[in-house]
Image: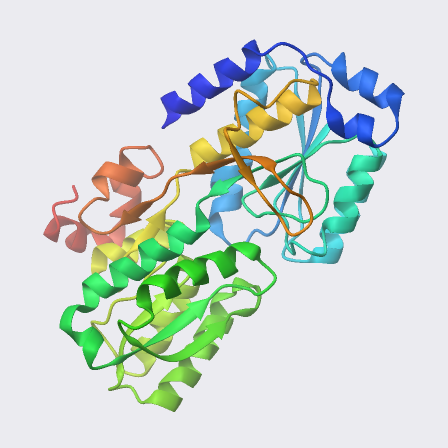
Length: 366
């Protein structure tokens, strides 16, 4: 995956200079000329949505910073801000970056709709915008994420496999992500396409702000409504919520039922090792982060995205956005070595530390 990303980067840097449409569309010819003449000395604004989910600070931020430095011979600067799950804060952060005249923005939106006005402000100032991980609304220039419908399908298929014949008799609980996140709707769509008609969905929730504590509360409500003996599995849209769900299941005396997840967080992988969580979706963050950096640098330097983005995606407000969708992998205890360990996301020592050592030994992870 990394070799593929490097190849993409090399192709992007070989593309001849082309006019950057975003600046021209804003009517500011001076900005357009300036963008086209930009070299390696660029300023990239990076806006991430929250820091409760481990991936953003552990993976996305340092990976993007590293790739920008690599693509600009160490001269490019990444200006970073985290919205801590507050859409208004993120809008203010965009305003600040526009004022500080960054050359390009990478935005992972807290709220895909609420960010639209700020995206337009950036474009009006001649600053191109890359939507990262979530498809922001407004006049974005590029988008990279994972195939989110496939993520949901992957989770649903894994849950059905784990349930086996129990899918015919019991009920599951669906714990979807936040209604403000367009990815959550796509995960849900993918999961429903697999689960509907194959298993009874006893309760379903859109979990406010993706918070584990909200998932925990929702799960307690589902157990109370359905009865603990009726629940045979849980669709959880990510690992953080899976942790809250499993805490509620344990408190109710429910064990040995499959729970899905996503993001391959360390805690999630450790729960998979112990059997408390059945699976997660491993999303190769290095590849996604590399592509975002490549897009941002190319846009800041006035170059074409043709060699980077082979796909087009429509948002509710913008058609045919140049896009790269990165494939995902279903992560279970059977392929931990071949995924997160092989790719250098975690070491065996990190996963198998302390109380997890015995469980790791049992599945041959040593």
